[in-house]
Image 1 (cartoon, one colour):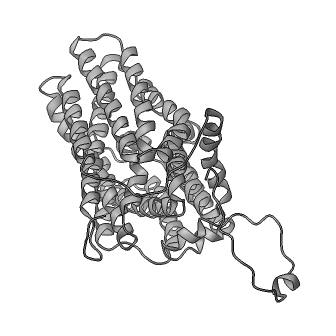
Image 2: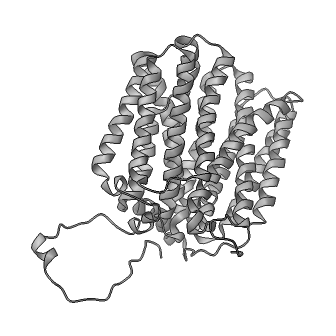
Length: 442
């Protein structure tokens, strides 16, 4: 790491943040255009859900193994290989769309290949910011990573939408250029001095892949943070219902719907920018559970409003609360994970995040069909509050986490297997040498 003044972000970290920005811009922009083209070709909303499923299934299948790869090899190179795979898919989409296609099946196949590349990218790209960040700026780096993603999330669809007007194939060349820019920024990161997993043999590699799951299950802080996201988003996700909310509850059209979607980006982006300058440093566990509860309350409140401005503000607040949750979890999980396990653990978390988003959309649709639009939102919001109450009770290690630095110590604690009688615990014992615990796969 180069010399730097205390409290400042090193240059390699800035290069990585720009690489993450260009990657997010390309991914979100390209997926947005693919969705539009598929819907233009078929006119079936179901195909949009199937398109998301085509991307998610390879991520779920391959992430445990790509996480192990990210722990064994240079994560910069693994990230670059994944980016090259995504760029190859962009070239394939450009070629196919340029041929005036009539079938969406090749597009689905290419998006499945894109999902494989995403499975390669995710563990390395999510671990690298923590690998590179000095401890005194780790919270700022995580917040800046969120800023980079939100910037790509906002700019990508708009930019690619404008380019689409020149021809449906040209956004994929823009994606190719953005992926190339990301790889160029990544080349400026330099060496990452972290411990790596030493694995020999295919059978041991399979055990290493499963170690990520075992590690998460045995660490209350990590398991609590990851599972909180899975179940809270599963119940509380209402983004899939926004078109129906806009039309049936608020009486607005496409422009109004666009404003509601913008509210989520504004809320999340504003919080991410604020966290980059004034990150949360104390009582992080209680803040995490509290903001998830705020998200649930906002979901319930949106169900009962018919005023557009009120719904806009509630969505903004909900997105801001969710952004705080993402910031805290994105800091806790990698800090509580040893360097040589971050790829595997973050790969599993990535599957959980994808599952919560995809299954959350399914849950919203099914409950809306069963209980109506208002009933679905109330059910989801109440479900989120129940999740918070359960996690508050059964994950005290997460609830009582004070500083982010404490997560490093908490990550080494496993669930106790045997209760120790108080008289034994209080009995004086002779000093004994302390042995360092070893993590799975080391």
